[in-house]
Image (cartoon, rainbow, N blue to C red; front, side, top):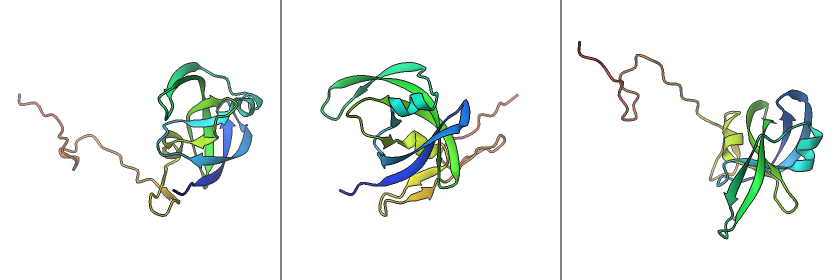
Length: 137
C-alpha cells in the first residue's frame, strides 16, 4: 500500500496570519485532521469540545477538537481539527480536504479538484432521484 503525504498550511481561523506548515499523511478513512496540540496552541487555536474516537484495534481514545483553516494547492477551507497527543500521526482527513474543494485520486494518489455541485430552488429533478415537492391547490 502506498501512502500519500502533502504539505499544507494550518492556521487559526481567528488569526489566519498565524500559520504553520506541516507534512500530512492523507487518510481517506479519517473524517478529521490531526495536528499536534503544541502546534495548535502555538497558533492560538483553542479546543471547543472533546470527542471519543475508535482506533483500528477497537480501543477508544478521547481527544480535544477545535477549528483550523487549511491552505493547500492555492485553496483554503475551514474544518474541525483534532488536538493530537504524543504518538498520534499528523493526518489530513476527508473533511479538511473537501473544505477547500479537493479530493484524492484513488488510483494516482494525487490531489484533484472536487466537483462542486449546487442545487438551485425550482429544479424539479436533481438527477439523483430526488424530486422537489409540489403542492396541488
